[in-house]
Image (tube, rainbow, N blue to C red; front, side, top):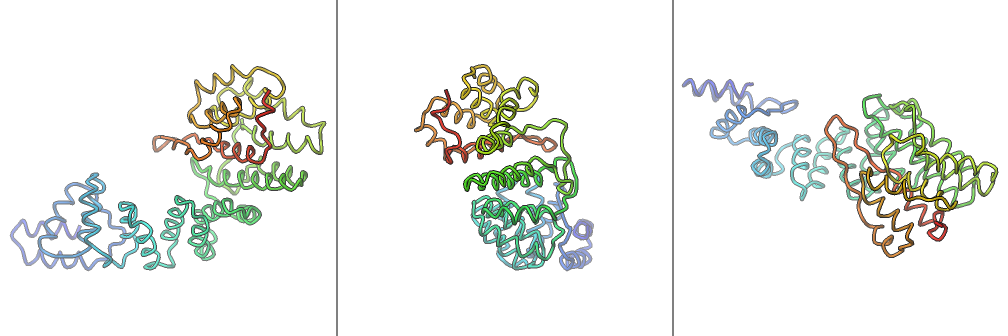
Length: 365
């Protein structure tokens, strides 16, 4: 606003007043300043003809980002160098310049070591690189300062999940309070997957009762994690793990788990097709039932082709193709801002169970 006032003074011929106003504008802190209109660019471009200041370049870059003039924005941000002692500047530049993302995020954290946002962004960067140890280090210290910050808490819980610290993650999630909001499913997803991986870990040591306890925990929807339980839930992964454990200690229960998995599509047709359907197909094939119809439905209605290709390779016993698909990347779902995209979260579990020989191709018939 003060920059606009300075520009107006200049256009009206009051240059001295204009320069005084411009100096006042540059003396103000850049906190909560978000110019974004095309008209703002005119005032800022005028200011840059009168003064050389990183704030003017930064503000103009924000306008250009809003207008999708990204190359010009990047030039301005690069031109500022490392002069700004303002951590949001480095967060903005980190988003626009992938080649300097880590350096800028680290610099942002150095300028504001007590602020949680730089640590959160740095942790997200390391997550995208699958550097879970570095991500944990980036977030853990700040979470100790802000134990009520569920953004940091969820990120740290995900780090614990990815580094195999399941009990630590479960304990953290039991204490964390996530503010309920539309689409707030991340906390419950991490809770479920942490308990399921803990169950698989227990299966590996033949601790069947402990595994079943983790599976039961994975079925729950803790109130503190920000989302309520839907009326209908697809628990075929949980049922399959419980089925496998029961074959070892409670064989009388296996038939019920198998029935629930195999008959799921008879009642619950609205659920998206994905890797949970693989468990249905697998048990149908193992028990000698035809799988052509459900496989065809998956082909017709499935949203992610990779799990389907993997399932077909498994059913055909194509071990070479299974090996090739191991390193393939799932498609990132495309959704509008108000939509919750479908993600096939069970596919990774399918591949883990295959590696552990819990799923055996030779049993498909």
